[in-house]
Image (cartoon, rainbow, N blue to C red):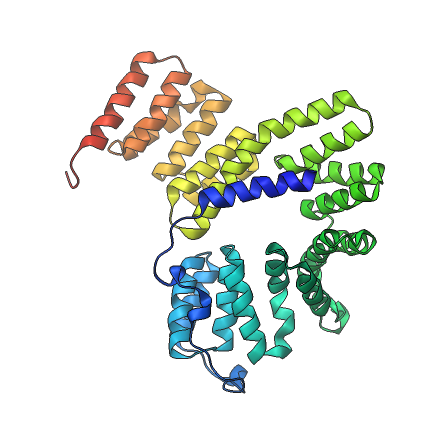
Length: 376
């Protein structure tokens, strides 16, 4: 039941957040031109054009849409270029465009079958599409070579083993799923997703004590993730621990709405990496969760003295000790007095400290700034 809730949360988030796509993003990967197998023999020794460097740079800085745009142009000029296909598959996967990712990765493997180890995300995409038998086959293929003989190692191997465990669970192969997840846990003991998956498998196997141990560890590692709280609640109910179940359900009900909003904004940011309003929204949700570490990371990404950074600083400081937030409020006014968003943040702060007149003034200033004609 916990897994079902997790899927509901993610599905709701993806449905709400996916923006309208334009340009190359609106084009199905299957419409790209194709090349005959053998066309790119010896491709590893070739120098890639500057357009590939632009695509790779965009991908590495987290701008998957730009990477898709550049890679699409490159593949129009050089159909089925293996490096471009591999990069494009990764960009589609990052944007949850799983159908396109599968298509592109499979074309890559037609031209470079010896590069199987670079396509573990193909198995993830197949699993995400519910094509679990195909996903299992691909996971087993990429995991077949031991790490000591040049196979996947470390976090990459743990990630593939976790995916294999999730896939085997969907196929009802719980013993094999547990074995894969235990191996993943040995490689990545701090990965909350591994512990959560193992807890769900043990719950279905009827080993409630082992399931609870894994769920508790997942909750410790990711205290703001509602899925572990939900699993702990259902396990407590099964064990007849009503009070514990109620406490975990309350935690789930508090965290789940924030988690859905957070996933919405994270997907929006994936599609529009320059959307600073989305990044500010993420920081504010992290503050609402009580995730001070996450909010501080977001603040670093925004820049502490930027408009959005100062708004987040004001929210953070006001939540802790309202009187100590005066410095952030003064800095916000000094640097960004013509931005209506600054006055929005100041209105909320002044209301918090009981300054009714100041809050009304800030609201009026924000409205006036928004009503100004463009360019004035």
